[in-house]
Image (cartoon, rainbow, N blue to C red; front, side):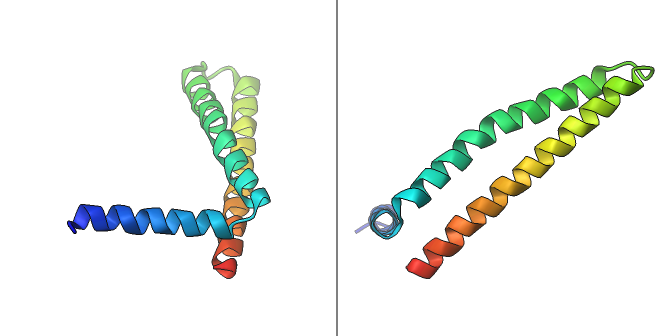
Length: 94
Protein backbone atom coordinates (compact mmCIF):
# COMPACT_ATOMS: atom_id res chain seq x y z
CA UNK A 1 0.00 0.00 0.00
CA UNK A 2 1.40 3.40 -0.96
CA UNK A 3 1.57 6.29 1.47
CA UNK A 4 -1.15 8.10 -0.47
CA UNK A 5 -3.44 5.06 -0.27
CA UNK A 6 -2.77 4.75 3.46
CA UNK A 7 -3.70 8.38 3.98
CA UNK A 8 -6.89 7.90 1.99
CA UNK A 9 -7.81 4.80 4.00
CA UNK A 10 -7.05 6.51 7.31
CA UNK A 11 -8.92 9.64 6.25
CA UNK A 12 -11.93 7.64 5.11
CA UNK A 13 -11.95 5.69 8.37
CA UNK A 14 -11.65 8.88 10.40
CA UNK A 15 -14.48 10.55 8.49
CA UNK A 16 -16.64 7.45 8.86
CA UNK A 17 -15.98 7.39 12.61
CA UNK A 18 -16.58 11.12 12.89
CA UNK A 19 -19.89 10.81 11.06
CA UNK A 20 -21.05 7.81 13.05
CA UNK A 21 -20.11 9.36 16.41
CA UNK A 22 -21.34 12.88 15.77
CA UNK A 23 -24.92 13.78 16.44
CA UNK A 24 -27.17 15.23 13.73
CA UNK A 25 -27.38 18.54 15.60
CA UNK A 26 -23.56 18.75 15.60
CA UNK A 27 -23.56 18.37 11.83
CA UNK A 28 -26.24 21.04 11.59
CA UNK A 29 -24.14 23.42 13.70
CA UNK A 30 -21.04 22.68 11.57
CA UNK A 31 -22.97 23.40 8.38
CA UNK A 32 -24.46 26.58 9.82
CA UNK A 33 -21.03 27.83 10.92
CA UNK A 34 -19.60 27.09 7.51
CA UNK A 35 -22.51 28.75 5.71
CA UNK A 36 -22.27 31.90 7.84
CA UNK A 37 -18.51 32.39 7.55
CA UNK A 38 -18.51 33.19 3.82
CA UNK A 39 -21.05 36.03 3.87
CA UNK A 40 -19.45 37.33 7.06
CA UNK A 41 -16.06 37.46 5.32
CA UNK A 42 -17.63 39.28 2.40
CA UNK A 43 -19.24 41.85 4.71
CA UNK A 44 -15.88 42.36 6.43
CA UNK A 45 -14.10 42.89 3.10
CA UNK A 46 -16.70 45.37 1.88
CA UNK A 47 -16.60 47.32 5.15
CA UNK A 48 -12.80 47.45 5.00
CA UNK A 49 -12.88 48.65 1.38
CA UNK A 50 -15.48 51.31 2.14
CA UNK A 51 -13.53 52.59 5.11
CA UNK A 52 -10.35 52.77 3.03
CA UNK A 53 -12.08 54.70 0.23
CA UNK A 54 -14.10 57.11 2.36
CA UNK A 55 -12.81 60.68 2.36
CA UNK A 56 -11.33 61.72 5.73
CA UNK A 57 -14.11 64.25 6.29
CA UNK A 58 -16.76 61.48 6.29
CA UNK A 59 -16.37 60.97 10.02
CA UNK A 60 -19.86 59.57 10.68
CA UNK A 61 -19.57 57.05 7.83
CA UNK A 62 -16.15 55.98 9.14
CA UNK A 63 -17.68 55.42 12.58
CA UNK A 64 -20.39 53.25 11.02
CA UNK A 65 -17.77 51.23 9.15
CA UNK A 66 -15.77 50.68 12.34
CA UNK A 67 -18.94 49.60 14.14
CA UNK A 68 -19.74 47.21 11.31
CA UNK A 69 -16.24 45.74 11.60
CA UNK A 70 -16.69 45.34 15.37
CA UNK A 71 -19.95 43.47 14.80
CA UNK A 72 -18.25 41.22 12.25
CA UNK A 73 -15.47 40.49 14.76
CA UNK A 74 -18.03 39.77 17.47
CA UNK A 75 -19.98 37.42 15.20
CA UNK A 76 -16.77 35.68 14.09
CA UNK A 77 -15.94 35.10 17.73
CA UNK A 78 -19.36 33.59 18.38
CA UNK A 79 -18.90 31.25 15.40
CA UNK A 80 -15.41 30.27 16.57
CA UNK A 81 -16.77 29.50 20.05
CA UNK A 82 -19.56 27.39 18.53
CA UNK A 83 -17.07 25.49 16.36
CA UNK A 84 -14.83 24.89 19.39
CA UNK A 85 -17.82 23.61 21.34
CA UNK A 86 -18.73 21.14 18.61
CA UNK A 87 -15.10 19.97 18.38
CA UNK A 88 -14.94 19.59 22.17
CA UNK A 89 -18.16 17.57 22.23
CA UNK A 90 -16.87 15.39 19.40
CA UNK A 91 -13.56 14.81 21.17
CA UNK A 92 -15.45 13.81 24.33
CA UNK A 93 -17.69 11.44 22.40
CA UNK A 94 -14.81 9.72 20.57
